[in-house]
Length: 367
Image (cartoon, rainbow, N blue to C red; front, side, top):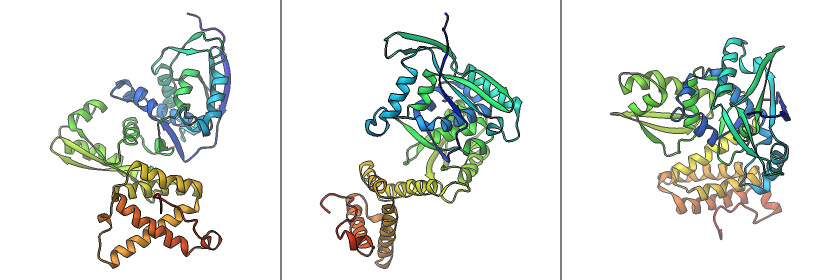
């Protein structure tokens, strides 16, 4: 079956590296999951780093189909560029040193070959103008080449949509892909991003089967795999985990890292601090997703609100200690009511109170 002429609709050229990238859940679960594709365990580490780099370089064009207000423009641009002309591709170009600082060409070449064959097959797309179905033969990438210290390859409209469409995604630290030296460890990190804050349990034999390990006991697996991954993530990631062994079960409890040794910009640190604090309050005081969404929306409206909330919470903790009360005894609506009072008190002593006397953020209705 002939594909016809290839149209290159976009060219992504070495965008500046971000600290955090949006990793699509669908991409991880459908295409990078050892449970569905054991071959991914054989991927050279460079292959996963190339995926991280493509997500970084294309991040400006990522869109959410369920977020019409903020990302409709990106969705429209994608449809105009890739779904109105048959057989459309995007080209990616970046330096060899972006993937391998020591310029390990052999590993990079192996990674490109792996990605060219990853889920290779015929993929369908519908031309939004003519309504005709177009089939394209491709793996995750195609026509890769290395020249003059640069890597370049094509990505079909089908695969580009997998990295641009982020209706469900997890923030991932870009640098983590270079700090973790083993493919399996990086795949565990991507899985960990999807583990709920409440934690999960996994059977020793199931984990070994999924990730193709062959340790004799649960303790051996934990000692040789989990401990190594955790030590790296504690220092070089936005998310790490604690673990405990009980018989054949491994209990995993994820947490957002603090004081990580990353050279990241102040704005990113603030975003990470916000994420850490919101998850901390959610767990400690049994808040619902709706409660956290309200608090987060108030922070997004005015960035100084986060500092106000932190000061209010610190005041709450101080009062609990002075009165000999455990902070964790306040949960749900009861906590929100006390927290709201502390927010109002802190606001009343701020400069903003002079301009808008009743302008304090309201985390509960009728407050």
